[in-house]
Amino acid sequence: MSEAETHEGSCMCGKVAFEVETDLDGLIECNCSHCYRKGLVLKFVPADKFRLVHGEGDLAEFRFNKHRIEHLFCKTCGVQSFARGKGPDGAPVVAVNIRTLEDIEPWDYETRKVDGRSF
Image (cartoon, rainbow, N blue to C red; front, side):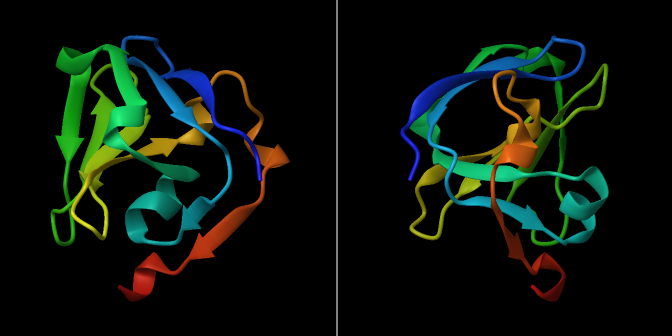
């Protein structure tokens, strides 16, 4: 089990930037039509462990299926750095695309495959 650290992340053009405090255990890859096409590797964190540094006004939103997750992407470069939603217990969570973290190599971490197509 890895230790929680603060990681910095951003979209490709840098208009959207954030910090997240998390370990890198429990990463998931989902095969739903959205995540699969974008190649997302996600880490779900409590909302209070995530801080948008700048770029709220540079975000656009996409919702699909049951419209429960606010998929946010940069209006300029199109990169989805994170999404907002609620966990199974109803608490606010942020799904961070770890491919947008600046200090890690996503291929160095194990992921759990989630069958989102079947939901």
